[in-house]
Image: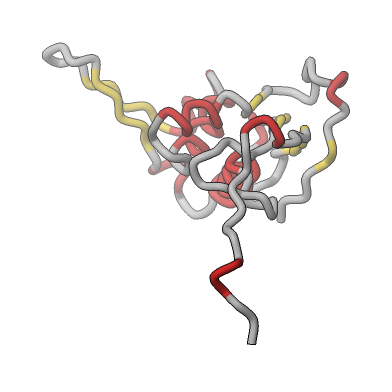
Length: 149
């Protein structure tokens, strides 16, 4: 029988994390499923060295944001609510309208909702890069294709 008291829990240090760049084509993908996979990679949960309080995640580039799909009747029924904190300052936007004006924002909001809402989450969110077309300025980082079902 082994001595289990000698086992140590591994905790990643910020300096020893190796970051990779991934690229995802959002064309024809379902928003929620894509966002959860992106959040998992941003958080670093796909790595063996995952540590909850350390940023161990990788960078993610999303292209073709305007061609994202939504399941069910969400294209007509899903809304985004915001308030300016002034009387009468309610603003309700339909997903269809947001996809036409700022398609990047739909993916960003979905991923942000799946990240921790604290300093670490804000740091993780900065590693998400979403673009409208197929062009992106991160070719020098040699991103690897990320498979999302």
